[in-house]
Length: 297
Image (cartoon, rainbow, N blue to C red; front, side):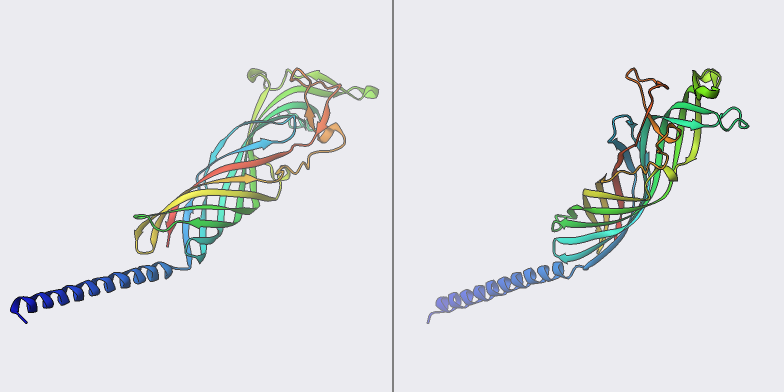
């Protein structure tokens, strides 16, 4: 065999050896990559802040929703992985929601004469209501593989909440005063004395309203977001969740058979008609958009 043929054979064998080694390393790298992905923690925990915008969706014909409120909360999140891209999302959220409402009702007691606590009024109430909830969410969470430094996720599920506290800020417009008419019962006259310098409107802050709202709340949860890998297993969590109440959160304890404890149906012109006032029950669900920002470990 010539020297050239020998060198060519040796070079060919060397190239085959290098190629075989490279392919083997690539295969091992793929296996290792899959192993590393599969060995990611099967349980992830984190903490997040929950700024929110919320409102009421009224379901009766005489309560009006008047706008949104911005509130703040925080929470603990936990993902229980049962496959590479799927997890059960749970945790604990402590947040506030609410909204602005207006309706007519009947109140007892003169706010400018505390000794006169039996006089009755027909009023229009504008209320900004804040509810404090602690919620246990249970969702199915869908995650992509990491793309660059980012993992995208979406979730769908339910939340069960317990009402810790409920407060309101009220603007009460006193429309009619009820006076004892003897055998004729209450005689209603247009109110002009209360807060005459402010068109008869009295403002109240930090009104306790636990008796006006439900103790338990159920909600549907739909959310999307990202996890941005910072280092190792630590990631920045960013997301937005629509938290949609499912049931009436007004417990209507102040509703009764007589006008003494009822919300009132206004006349066609929008004012109260004392001779024809009728009662109704408030029905409303609370909705919120929660923005989450936190860390996963």
